[in-house]
Amino acid sequence: MNASTAGSGGQIVVAGAGYAGLHVALRLTAKLRNYPAVELTLVDRHDYHQVLTELPRVAGGTRAADAVRIPLQDMLATRVRFVQTEISGFDLAGGRLLTGTGPIGWDRLVLALGSRPNDFAIPGLAQRALSLYSASDAERVWAAASKALDDAATADGPERQRRLATVVVGGGGATGVELAGELAEVLPEVASRHGLAPDLPAVWLVEAGPTILAGSSPQLIDKATRMLSDLGVQVRTNAVIAAATEDGFRLTDGQLVEGGVFVWAGGVKAPELVADSGLPAGHNGRIKVDRYLRVLDHPEIYVAGDLASVTDPRTGHVLPPLAQVALEEGETVARNLDAEQAGRPLEAFTFHDKGFVVSVGTRRGVADIAGITSGGRLAHLLKDSIEWEYRQSVKHLRGWDPVAR
Ligand SMILES: Cc1cc2nc3c(=O)[nH]c(=O)nc-3n(C[C@H](O)[C@H](O)[C@H](O)COP(=O)(O)OP(=O)(O)OC[C@H]3O[C@@H](n4cnc5c(N)ncnc54)[C@H](O)[C@@H]3O)c2cc1C
Image (cartoon, rainbow, N blue to C red; front, side, top):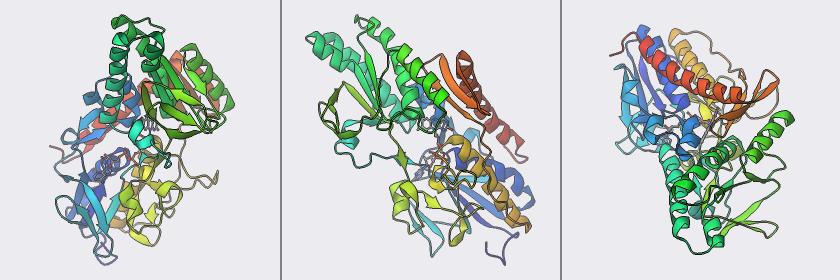
C-alpha cells in the first residue's frame, strides 16, 4: 500500500500472534470494516496464543499448560486470515515473508515475533539449563522438578538426595523471582507425597547484579527479598555464572552451585531470523523504529512488542520487554494502520506505565503502582486480576468485532 493505493486496499500482514500481534489483529479487525478491500493476515507457528505471564504457574504445577494456550480460532473473526506456519526469513525488496508454506506478500507488515531466551554465550547453558518461554518450556520445568524429587526418593545418601531435590534458577528478574517463589511454595508438598522430608527441596536464585528485580524501587526489592527468604529461597546476588556444567552452575569466583534442575531466566534477545534480516538492530538485536513504530528507513514495516527497540524520551532508556508495553504498542500500530487507510496523520507512540506487579509464591506478591509500593496478599490478587482482565479484554475485542462469526 504505497501512497497511491493508501485507503483503497492492500495486504496487511501481522507476523506473530503474541501480545502485540494478536492485539494489532483484533483492534484492526474492527477498524477495517470501512475498508473491505484490505486483507488482514495473521501468521504464527502455533494455532494458539500463549499467555506467557502465567508460565511460572505452569512451571510450578499449579496451572495446566493448556490453560495458557488460547486457541486462535476462538478469538479471530472470519475477517482475519490466519496462516499457521514457521516464518523463516524476509524478502524485503520483494515485500514478502518467507514461510514454511511459501511466501506471503505484504503492502504493510507488522513484525511482532517476540523474543528468545538470551544465554549470553555462557558455555553449556543452552544444553544444561531449561528455559521458560513457552507453555511447553513450562511443562518441561515442572516435569523435571517432579522427576528430580522422584529420583531423590530412591537415591542413596542424604547428600545426593539434597542435590537432586535442588532447583537452581539463573536470573533474578521478574520471571526468575516468580518461578523461584512458586517452586519454593509447592515443592515441599510434592516431597511429602514422595515420602521425603518437606524441607528437603531447596530453591536457589542466582543473580549476576547486586539486587534481584533490578530497576525496581528499593522498597519493592526489599519486600520481595524478604518474601523469598520466608519461603526458603536462597538468593545469591553478585553471582555471575561462568559456565553450566554437568555438576551445576560454575560462578566466576570458582564456586559451584549444585542442583538437580537448572532453569535459565536471565534475559531475552531478538529471534535469530531477525538478526539475518538486514533490518536495523539495536540492543539485544531488537529492531530500531521511529516514533510511529515504523522500522527506520522502512516505513512500510511496523514493529511492536519485545522486538521493537523503543526509547522512552522521558527516561532515555529502551522500554523493557513487557506484556503491557507490547499491548500499548500493538494499539498504536493498529491506530496508525487505520490512519494510513483514512489518510490521517500517524500517531507517535507514548508509553503509559501502569505499574509493576510480581507474584512471590502462590499467595503473595509485590507491586509498585503510581509510586506506592505494596506487598502481600493484595499484590498477588492484583496480579490475578490483571491476568483475568487480560483474558476478558481478548474476549471483549473478539466480541466487539462487527463481522465476527
Ligand atoms: C515466564 C514469563 C513471564 C512473564 N511475565 C510478565 C509479566 O508478569 N508482566 C509483563 O508485563 N510481562 C511479562 N513477561 C513478558 C511478556 O510475556 C512479553 O513482553 C510479551 O510476551 C511480548 O509480547 P510479543 O507480542 O512481543 O511477543 P510474544 O508474546 O512472545 O509473541 C510472539 C509470537 O510470535 C510467534 N513467532 C515467533 N517467531 C516465529 C516464527 N519464526 N514463525 C512463526 N511464528 C513465530 C510466537 O509463536 C508468538 O506467538 C513474561 C515473559 C515470560 C517468558
